Image 1: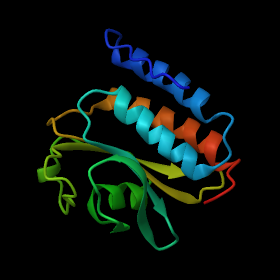
Image 2: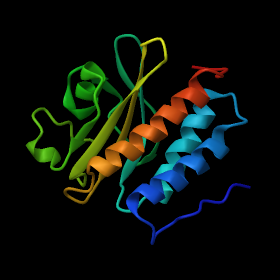
Image 3: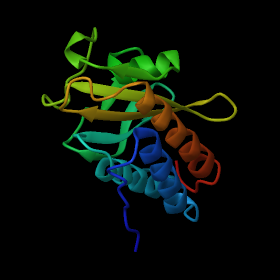
Image 4: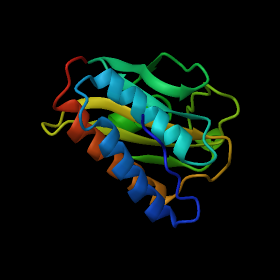
Length: 168
């Protein structure tokens, strides 16, 4: 049984370091990509405060398609360049959005979302895998420290889960 530890009194950087170690331990011995993505989503969702959605959109060669996540039902397909997820995928650059209502073309899957961070997932050969998307009902929930922490989590996820997968 896996137990989530929450370092609630630690600095944000320390919380992400702890979460990174937990994520590595959680997916280290599993080869199924979907299983790893599901557990990763759950780990982040239940470890960080003030989240209402955390999950994956995978790139199917044409568009982003919802993958394992935690939260309310989500938009199923997102075109590259559309909304925060599509922009992160197209630009291959992390998007930190303090106010989703101010983001041109924002896609409101959950009307409670007020801020968002999306990290593109790119394989070592440069292939777009998809994006990691996290929403919050709190405005300005995410900052540069969250971007660094989420990017480190995603780098570890791609390295551990993408290269050894048994299912895509």
